[in-house]
Length: 293
Image 1 (cartoon, one colour):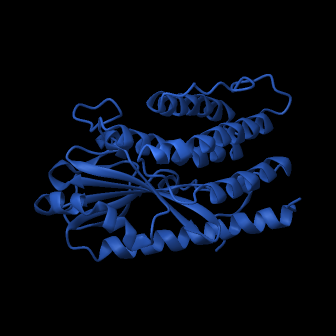
Image 2 (cartoon, rainbow, N blue to C red; image 1 turned 90 degrees about the horizontal axis):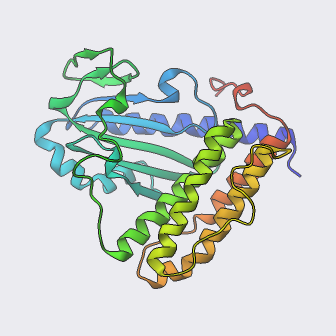
């Protein structure tokens, strides 16, 4: 059994590694002359991050350099360290532009960085931006938040490949990218959001099952059970069960020619284990001072 002291030490380690990752990212983008502005948004920009927060980074690109930079986006994010898992979700990107969700593995576990690239002619400074630099003198847009620039999941022109192995690869990475986010919501006691996200994991598995022509996944117990005696523990158990079901499908996914995220299971399982202990020990993420480096 992990002690309270050990879990708090782990959370503090994550805060320190977040700060290091953020500093490295800022150094990387500051030295790129193709970028005209950059800002953080999300919980860090709001001043309310915790040890499980992701990093949301918005980059404004000189229009002349947008297409080449977007073309090399996977190499670009690897300058921060080899991503352990990358999700390409075109519906989250500005148009024109690009988006990648990258998970980097460090000693404290997985760290999610959401990368966005936007054409300069579209850029304005939204009210939620924590500016890293601004070389173009952006006009302020106090009625906008950063994600207003993104297209949304139903946007026209979103790229939806038809090839079976590509669809299998995308849905597999999508599933495993969502699992740490669900676990984070449970750790924060955002239980309604966690229930909703757990419910959305099942259709992802069943999309894969349909592509493989195998029977659909049927949970042994209701995923959404708000009457559970210990709802957070119920959610952790459901997340483990769904994850195990997904893992049993992966040999068939690989046999169909799809790419799987390498060795993702161990770090995700370790993160879920620690989050279960956060719940068991009744630790609030907000009690860990995020400014204590």
